[in-house]
Amino acid sequence: MTEKRSEQDLIQAIAQLTARLDQLTQVFGHLFPSVVPDTAVLDTAIAFRWEKTEALLQSAGFIPLHQPQLIEFDALCNVDKQQLKIRQNTEQFVKGFFANNVLLTGARGTGKSSLVKACLKEFHALGLRVIEVEKKFLNDLPRIVAAINNRPEKFIIFCDDLSFEEGDTSYAGLKTVLDGSIAGPSSNVLIYATSNRKHLMVEKNRDNLEYHQSPDGEIHPGDSIEEKVSLADRFGLQITFYGFNQQEYLNLIHVWLSRFGWSDEDIKAQEKLALQWATQKGNRSGRVAMQFAKQVAGQRMIEQEQGH
Image 1: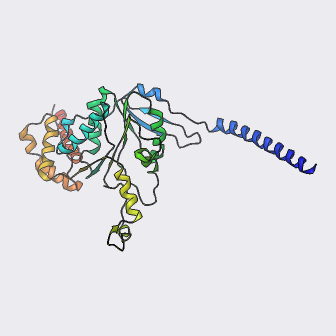
Image 2 (image 1 turned 60 degrees about the vertical axis):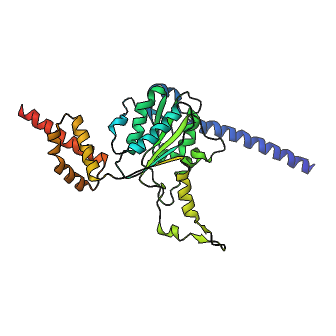
Image 3 (image 1 turned 120 degrees about the horizontal axis):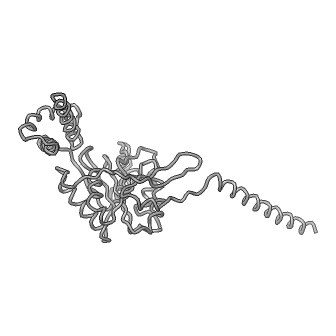
């Protein structure tokens, strides 16, 4: 009798606990709703940014960018080989053919992110869309991919200027989307990422100490190096960018100032100042050339205005 009573008490206690859990689920469901990203907004633009409110509700969604920065491929100089690779890969993608995730690494200011913007300019009429995701939101990537998986457009998820310090695990979502999920890759999504680091992660001297040699003489890398290399290896296409020499830099100055309506003679007269500008910046790159061109062109416009 006592044993039967104990069993009934246990069943009743479980039922009460279950009911209480249901009540708590309903309460917290109102406080912390499971926000499903609104994909209808993806009909309103060709470029988007993933935003997430770091608050109690943790709301997240796609923010349309109605005036994205679009660049012509022809406007990019000194990166012909890199341009050919990314342009061809993107064309394969938008036409429904096989294509790869892309990692663009190398010298800063040499056109890595500009090439992604050029892809959007070139192929948005064929259904290409770009979603920019900041590093701090990388763990949302599986959620983003799931939300857009059945959309008719082709999406490039753009992750700019990525690098991961020691102990940083924010790349977990990126690894999952790049081949690490049992769900398999989505046919309408690619990841295009840029980084100044070849392997995306900080490398330390002690990593090399982890190399070990087997009895038969075979050399094996340590776990730290394996982890660093494996992330970059998940990108099927890796494109490297290099710093510009002096003449390439001056050629860019010529291109930019020509667009602003300057004559060849006027541009030639600015070369010394352009080199000094690069020396002060500590870098010869497309970005530095553009900044110099805007500076001197703006100054001339002011002078012309005051002269009138």
